[in-house]
Image (cartoon, rainbow, N blue to C red; front, side):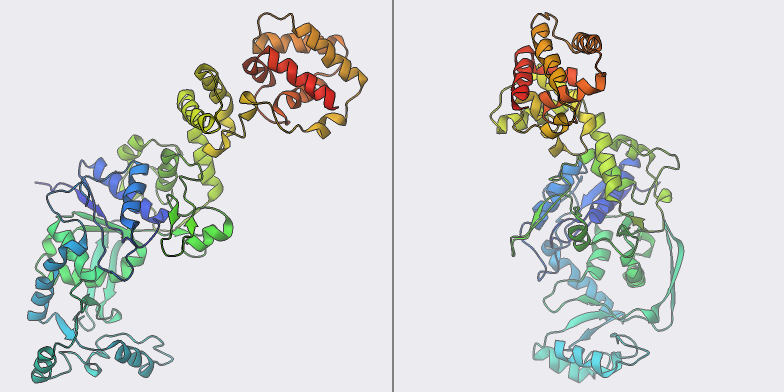
Length: 507
């Protein structure tokens, strides 16, 4: 009988949620939903020195905004809790001690100063960064190099110690990655990682294996930067007697800088002027706010669509996917091995496409929120019509007001210089006379207004473009915007005439 798919997203609450982290959560979610499985949020907060207050709630808020809410989590609970590693502290020591008993781990009593001395003492041109491994192990203070009496004496004195894995010397360790195929490491290339810290907290290496086992995780997706840690984890699964239960692994490609040279970082976003966090993140220590995609005016549908395509496609030319379509079509074997360059212009394109696809009523709801903030009242029917006219012009939600303000208030600024270049007495008379003519129009609709105005302009032997541009500026204040007669219809006859008269007076 095939096991039920269970996957986890396991972030550390140390700050803002990078878009790479959200993509990892998204791929986990899509894989779980595609296979009818469970998606778990586990908070890996064992490093208390890096813990940031508020970061866990921020992570949950980001996932909720993206619509990838977990089935089991610290807040939702579940049958395999607790889901914070700090609350599971008592679980890990027994497993570390089992490794000690079996000779696969050892106690290390080295102080930070002694560790630093080792890095300096054994540094060479061939080995510029000495590690704690089979070469240096016997030269340090640990239960491998000390006598049993010396170890007992240190323990009786309650000397702080960590528990390190004892990596075998010159052993080939292999596994199959769901994205990269067969991968092989030589154990001697990996240092003796700390498994349990002096304060009793596990490191990532021990905790991730124990928790994945106890939570019955079937597939583990993580960034490719963790690939080098795979030998440690494989050995822990093996030495703890759980190798048959080890999840299948997939190491996801990095999200790269726009030039493709290295992993995308917050500094790159600051330097190039785009967000790299899902939502605004305020550093509680400095008060600094890092801008998020949500606050930049991204729709969550566009954000997850863009993220899904950063390293995956379904094999077709399709780029716009709903979450339901992504769930249906997602497969891990379509995830690329190579890193994906982040392109902010492409991200904007995704958002623009999703805004265009949004219903007029939904866009109108966002516009009404803006109008309420500005204490401007407008007919809901008018707002819906305005939404339909402007949404294709907006790449972000914060562009709704700049593209619609002239429907709800008289422009404060007019681009008169664009009118003056060809303004003359003939044009003045044209608009003055059309005001008189339009006063008699009973059906104030865009199609009738357009026909009437163009017929009137033609009767004066004036080119349509020479009259339409000034009319647009008179009504909207600038040369851009939706159809000028749509503007005239929605602001009404009285306001249209008023704006034309006002502009003529300024010229």
